[in-house]
Image (cartoon, one colour):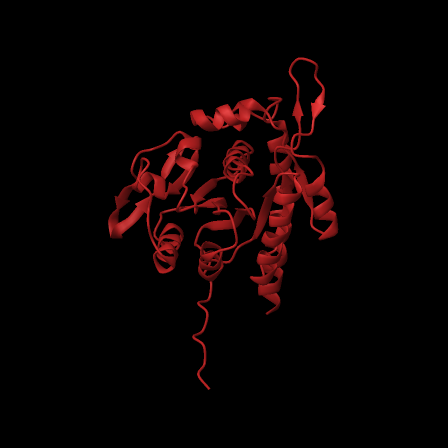
Length: 276
């Protein structure tokens, strides 16, 4: 009977303390918005942060970070990540800018993800945030085969359709043995600027219920605020305004909870390594 080839063992990145993937079961839930604003919030909270745009087919990090220059290549063919808002970032959007799509198959995707992890000069980082593509495909498998992840964050809107796909993302992370550090409910509600009445455009509270159902921490909800979208479109994430900004406060609260969960997960992982 033929043996299937051995799965590659993940290898830790030297100097990188924690790697956190931000995922969702479907597109359009604001996953990149959450990833970018969490990266900025963590950086403003004194952490050294890197950000990988692993959404190869739809790279939005360059626009949201306001950075489009091509990365430089250093000695030994090492890629030097762009430094934007104090965060080291890499994206296919820097290498192939504009509207021309990248057409590629699974093995090429795997190669790019490996390059972004292993051939980029990340230096010393407290957090490397990986903005995953929507869905449950090749990129996640490439990621977990290449580096040990500290954990993942699942982003969902409160709608039933979004939550159904978020549950698939939770199951996917369980299958590849990645701990889910928590769920974030994005576009949780909208406050009318005129009457100040809360409007639940996509329903409300569904992600928190799903977190309880799966016994996973709920990291918090992000209100649907035009300033968040405007900041992303202008390359100036709202979290640049700091934790006292009303538009950014919820992101900082989520970032604080994420730090606590990630530090606990990293400590538990190092305990396991010491025992074995």
